Amino acid sequence: MRTSLFYLLDHYPELSGSVEDRYVAVLDQCVLAESLGYEAVWLAEHHFHQLGTAPNPAVLLAAIAARTTDLRVGPAVAVLPMRPALYTAENYAMVDNISNGRLNLGVGSGSSPFELAGVGLEPARAKDEYLLSLEELRQRFEGAAAGQLGYETMNLPPVQQPAPPTFIATSSVDGARRLGEEGSSLLTISTPGTRDTSEIGDRVSAHREGLIDAGHDPGSRQAVVVVFGCCATSADEARALGGPALARTTQRMGGPELDSNMLYDKMVDAGTAVLGDPSQAAELIQRFADQGVDRLAFLSGFGALPVDRTADSIRLLAGAASHVMLEPDAGMATPAAGTHPTHAHPRRS
Image (spheres, rainbow, N blue to C red):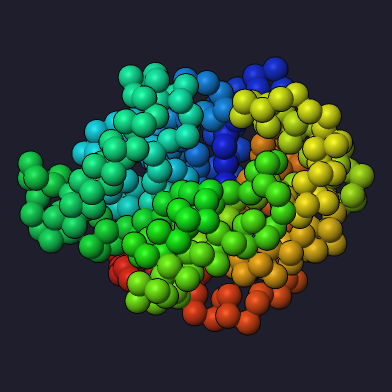
C-alpha cells in the first residue's frame, strides 16, 4: 500500500493554538513522513471559514517542497473557479519548479456553496467555470512547456512536461468512470457518510474500467483515496483521541453534532476510516486493499489532534500499511513511488 498524508488544516483556536503553530507542525510532519517512506502530501483549499486554513495551498506546498527532496506535493484540490486560471497556472508552475518536478495537481470545482458565494458564484455556474479554467490551465502549461512564453501562456514553464499530472476529485461511480475515460487520475474520499469500503471499491474499479475502455494504460494513472487516519499504541487511546476529533471535524464540515464514540465506532465497523491501534489499522487498511485500492492518503491532524500524537500516528500508520497485501493486479502496473510514467521528472544538480 502506497501512502500519503492529507491535511484539511481545520482550526480550533481554543484547542490547537495559533495558525502559525499549525503550519510549523505540518512542515515538521511532512519531513517526518518523507523519512518514513510516504510518497506525497496533499492540502485542502478552503475560504471564509476555518474548516481549512490554507486558502492558497501553493504557498504552504512550496514551503514543504523546500524542506523535502522526494515527497510529492499537491493541492486536493485547487478550486479552479475561485481565481483566474492564469493565477492557478503561475502558482503551481512555481511549486513544480521549487519542488523540481514533484507537483501532483489536484483540481475540482468546489463543493461548498458558502465558499463559492463568497466570490459571487452559483454552484451551477461554478461547474462551467471549472471546465473553462481546466482547459485554460492545460493550455497554459503545455504552451509554456513548449517554449511559447508570453501573454498566451505565462512566464515560466513547469518542470514536468508537458504538464504536471492532473488528479480530479469525484465522489461518484459515474464521475470516476468518466475521469478514467478522459485519462485523468482520481482523487476520492471516504467520509462519515460513506456506506462501506465497497462504495470506495466501486469508484476505484469504475475509474480503472474507464481507463481500459478508452485505451489508456491503467498503470499510467493513479486512484488516491483519502481516509481519516488516527493510530495510537492502544485501541483505547486511539478511541479517546480520535472520537472527539472526528466529531469536531464532522461538525465543522457542516454535519450535525454527533456522539463521538458512536461516530468513531460506526466508521470502524464500516471500515471507512483507519482508526485504532496498529493491528486494527492494518486490518482496516487491508479492507481497502481488498477493494483494489493501492493508494491511501491519511487525513491527519484533524479535529485539534495534539501535534505530538499526530506525529506518533503518522509513524504507526506507516508501519501498519507496510504489512498490507495488495490485490494481485492492484499494484503491479502502478508507477513507482514518486514517479508518474507520462511525465519527465528531471533532477537538477
